[in-house]
Length: 537
Image (cartoon, rainbow, N blue to C red):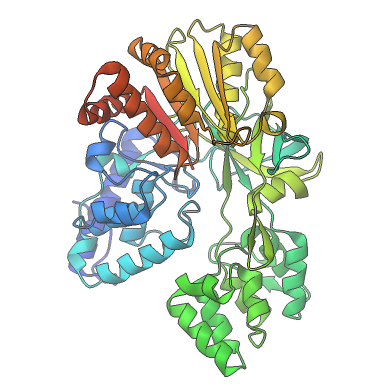
């Protein structure tokens, strides 16, 4: 084995041995595959293939709770337990897949624990606890890799360093259209957003578009004013060019989730004893921050008014702003040079204060027509149309989950695909929340959409969801499955995806005569065959 980590490096023997093997493997693979030069950004790494994942990583299921995933990985080595703490979406938003991000954290290659946006504060906190526990056992750091594939570069038609296909190499796109999909009277706010690429980008149905959002400018100016700054002060982060504080707060730093470092800096500069004491406690355990009325960074300044650190120190203590991913709701064949998104505007109340999602408010409210956004294409991992255009597909996508299926239908219509298409769509109300209704009805008329089954939960006394429609039409759905149809699910991971999975199991039992265990095995086999794919969040 080549010795890559010198003896003088500050590692234990077991750590040094593990890192030597890990880096040697990466270098050997790079030479064998003739990859991009070392100056290219770290690529998204490929986790185990879909067929092996259920057995190899039983916790790799976004419908499981954090506690359930950690329990499944409890006796595993540190990288496995870290992987279980992640969001399990393999979305690539962090620049890795779940397995490879866990490897990078466990090995010390990546020290940023806040990249898993889907996992949020709970994931970051859990990883810190796991790392603290793992440090007491050097053998943990010498654990074998999650899988041979976990350290391999992602399988993609684009080079890792190609502009527009990596989060660190975005390209510009201008806002071409933004219109409300909900009708007046709806309880929701959802925008159809069309972005026009400045330079060519290639994508396929099922891919996502990464957006680097901008924080709310009013919030940024308020923070600068509270800390009595000008905004023109210069700040520099590791490996980056100097930027103004204003630019850092607008584009570089996360203003949503307060970090332990931020609580620590605020504690060090708090003049009030009570503020200083409580901030010190939150620096040790930030999980209780919402209990004290602290939900985002601005709340820290409003709640602890005696804590006014220097502006540069404050900015450096913030987490890094992460890109947001949105399923592309268009076919590149139907809309060349553009990508369409279906963006739900996130807004929620917490202790009489309104909070808005960073990405959705940027796209739906702050980004103006013809203004530029920084974007990149995130290729899908196991969520794509069947290679055989004669195969039938069943698409289940309530709410904004319809986005990739609009792309699927546009693509299949232009390809004159012979396979049948069945869409299950659900939302709150028919008149106010039927996204893309005219388009879908036109596709039905043109026989490009074979069946359209809808569920509008608030239009009757008893709430009806897509899984209820599936059960009602279980006999026909089973005939489609028995004839080789592929099933796709897009939307909420915590409830909808699990309910749909249970509905499919129930249909297999009722229509196929399977036992409970056989029904589960049936869906597992569909997954291994690539006929049951989920894009959930």
